[in-house]
Image (cartoon, rainbow, N blue to C red):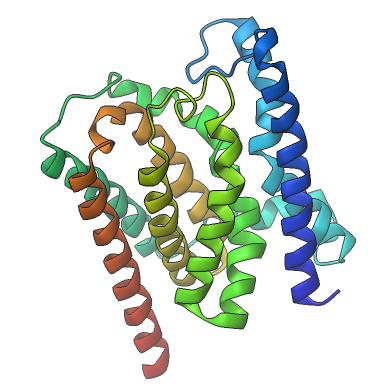
Length: 265
């Protein structure tokens, strides 16, 4: 199977799973179904299980597509690629720098510093955000964005991936219980964030070598956890423009430096 067909099949399957599952959950909304951003009870956990199928659609589609196209022998090889974490350390520094820069600029330009949740909630929510958030990158950063980068180059692949990623997120604005549907995350600001973050994911993927997928999974997990803690900080236009512009700039400079280093080798 050609790389183009892999990308097309992955994207189509991802959207089929995501839109079918989310559509059913949206239809159940009038009957009382809702998603829980913070889980305190077993019934709330159970309510989030079908929602997890929607969020995990890129990972599910990734494995199915790669297995059918004989790009991976089985689940073990797929998991080994997704969770390969060994690198020289620079990628870890990059994602920490990106997180600090993003939320610090939001705080500085919004004038808000109060967290929505205690800081320890960041660490408590990491496992949940890995499953509902981070593992998206087992699809986006394993198949979609690298494949588009190979064909079109860095910047166009970031833009195309950002548009696809944004379209995939649209059901969140209609699913009862999500911060998106409750109006806590304005669509326009979210769209800017999606486009900017794909530049950062692309940069992380480029400088991380074999650990590229895992580093993107890790950044996505940590970003979602931090977004919950600093939810009130990230909802102003000055902060949105400053933080996302800085992330794009850092990403472009990182990729340029990486390309220069490879040229000099």
